[in-house]
Image 1 (spheres, rainbow, N blue to C red):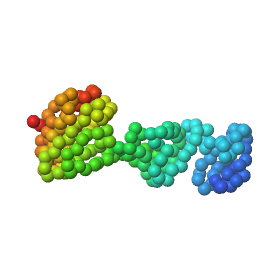
Image 2 (image 1 turned 180 degrees about the vertical axis):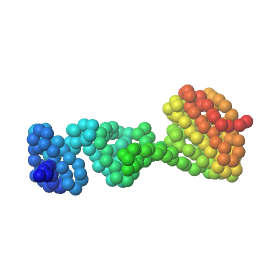
Image 3 (image 1 turned 60 degrees about the vertical axis):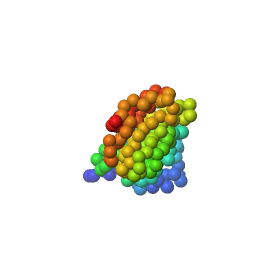
Image 4 (image 1 turned 90 degrees about the horizontal axis):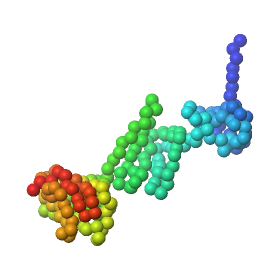
Length: 213
């Protein structure tokens, strides 16, 4: 004769409303979410974490195609069991320059795509920390200067990186605003659709990659 085993079950709302304390090792299943908890004989349902294959008492967070605003520069969160329906979009931890999209396919594999933000300039400009990490497209028809300010005027972190693309006809020339600024490497773009990468390597010292002249 067949034997049917039925676990203690109910909808998520029902479990929350009743809020029972499961016995040690007792399973409780949410029929509408397919999630379950394993009792420890102490914590009531609402305080008991959802079970996972790796850690029966780790926490679970369910996010449905929304911006994860909790991942910011001022908050640090650890999520042990992330259930994603659709795509999870979150900002770069160190700044808001880049954004990433996490997707989970049907096999459970997590894939990450990172995007860098693009800004457009049509006239010459001073290089500041607000452009650090950005992809800067210069679209002007006339030649223009990208001016590096001295650290005494505008402080930027060492190891800051800037990418400047000549998208228009105007040639880009990188210059320093003071004689104390050292620019190593060729400081002009080679023509339209050519780019320079500017790296701050010391207090007032910058290396340029990809230039000519």
